[in-house]
Length: 156
Image (tube, rainbow, N blue to C red):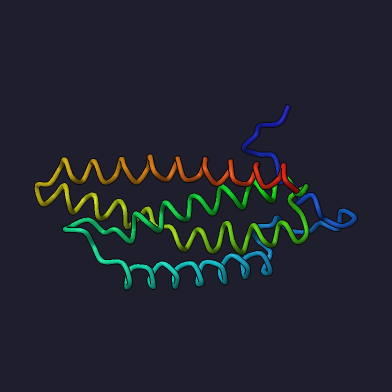
């Protein structure tokens, strides 16, 4: 019996003829898709931050980005799962939009920083409420995205 820590990484389902293709996370094309999507997502988040003012000391743009990104990711992944196996064009869309764009657009590091600043400034209740609201709204948005994807899948 082999140990899970020593098992080699599995090849992708779209590997051709067992030619020893490297795992997906090491392929330049996959890395490029994630990087391009991440750059676009980060630029979109910055645009949002420039256009949406803070409410008091709360960075509203961070909240909006995280909740919107959670919705898009839920919708995207449900829609892709309904289309079939994670290979070919579906995989490229997942890498570009899901991992890349949504990963760059959402920003839980800014959520953590904002929460820490609020806590450090003596606004513990506000900071904890902000963090909890962001996480709960994000989970609800993700579930809503999945539900919308399921609804669209039934209509198709």
